Length: 186
Image 1 (cartoon, one colour):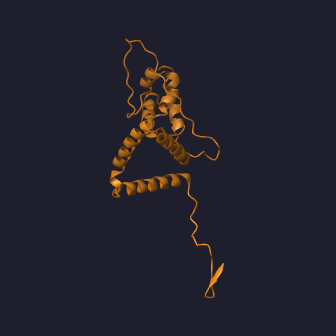
Image 2 (cartoon, rainbow, N blue to C red):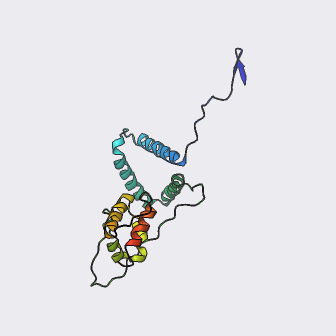
Image 3 (cartoon, rainbow, N blue to C red):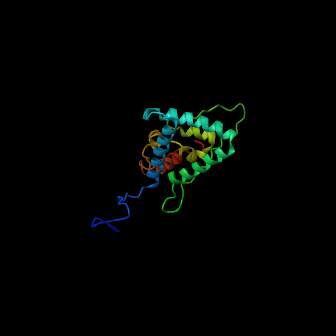
């Protein structure tokens, strides 16, 4: 502390303490600041409606530069990894969300019927079984939203009156129900 004209003054600046930010908040804040800095560097106006255009232009130029300049590519990869660690922190129980194994279609002869699974429509368990086999049905259903799975579960209930999922608010319970009542191969 120092005195100035009889008034005691602190040599430290009085900075109000900010509440600690969560990783998700830090991730969002970094994105906002990076976008603002890029707009300033390029003398672009602040237009929140053009974020997709700015992102596309940036990605295109960065891809071109990455092919020419390995140091630039390495710097982008390093920064990407750093930001991803902010975005997806390890949960308190120490486990990360497990990545799902890839789906492997069944091998078919050229004479088998062609089935196309529409990922934007509620799943048809019988079509999924035709493409991936009963053993991958549960895994394939993981790619659908809970709302889509509920629609499929309703159809399964119509086919099997008196049955229902343990819980309609749990994706795992709805998937278990669909798998159980879709039969082993029908």
